[in-house]
Length: 343
Picture (cartoon, one colour):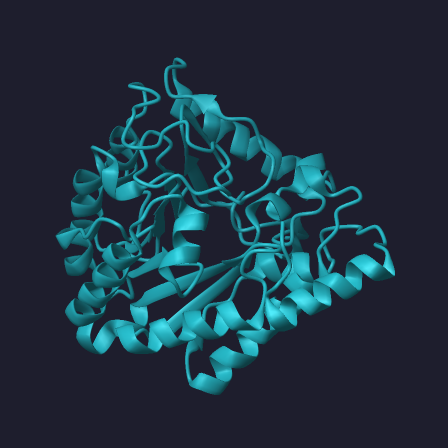
């Protein structure tokens, strides 16, 4: 049947801090159902079926209207299979990135909640036969390698043959991830390095762990061997910080030395929030840096990971940007070229 919907509504689950929902895109809602609610899992699935039926009749939820994943096409009927799970860890982290949405609330391994345990949900999906070898499970949010149940979940999914991706800061090396990278189903790891120098890393991550991360990346590349393209290194572009040629060039130099084959780019986390759609300004230095990163990746022979959401932001498909003054734009252009703009 042809109607507007998306892959996430038709088969994904977002396991987050205190509950879960049927969509795991980085935008606002549906609301989470708490893990502690009676029949929480069944409630979430009933809610999924209800929204699918509404969308078949032309209804578009307010929080879906600006999402770049929304698409009108001939969708197949929902068969109960879950093709994507996102496991967020909002309990621990071993960094204190200035761009983190929860800031340093959980820095240095401090627990925020003892209610969070996503293993039973994942185990239930496996037992019900709702996960297939085509299912994709991503671990992110905080630092997934610090999550108590992370090894347990990862081992279960490895045995089940699902495709896996771990988004991590790379400070901690995890042997089970090394094993994951060698499997035949294109498992991947994505490490946000965001720069090419110790000084800038410390400024962005607010921990002095650049050398540790470089060592971790080199170990994963070595373990993966012929599958080294599965080790993806990410560069999140921040206004007035690393949105210039100098920092991007330094990043690629480090990647070459580490033997990295695949890179990814994104834009500032705060600019990725749909609630800031009105009067949002994307500085020209960010736009230029985004394109320059792509050109350099191609020129240097790196595989560039697609980023649909970031593309939509840069192409102004999400935001209705207000105009900025000519002086501000010129300053932004100079920062991109020379990296000398100060906060």
